[in-house]
Length: 193
Image 1 (cartoon, rainbow, N blue to C red):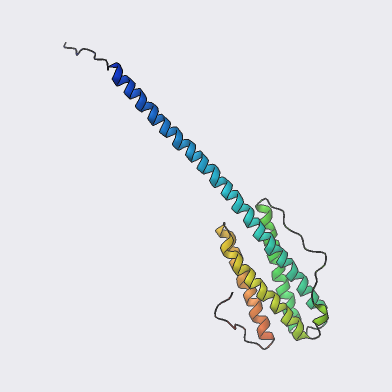
Image 2: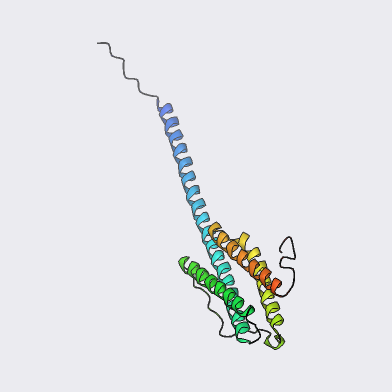
């Protein structure tokens, strides 16, 4: 049997390999630490976006509570006729559904849903006829359309943006129907702002 003699690396070669190994280990450690820092930064950003989504939802929830109260004022005003009163109640029901869905989303996200105010300041002294009530409700719906239009792109969670867009569509339909009930063009603009 012919055996090759065991050749040991020179001390200089061992030192280079050890240095290279430490350099690779150090580069790996830095990458892992950098990744950990990046993950921590991403988690903080996610937490901030999550909190922002909850704030947007609570703002929408407050507006929906106001709409429920406004339709109640309209329904109790005695100014709505047999055609407009069921419409007001139906739209109020939609807003109640919105409040339930939004409040549930806030809770699911670990937030605390805002509560409805005990009392709202509505211009009841200016509501003298059915048209006044319908115009008041149409103005609120138009405001809701604008608010949701502004909120949709702000959501970090795209599912929340989709739900807000769905509510936006409902508010736009309310506005169009109320305008038509007033004898106005239901869709006066090609674009909303």
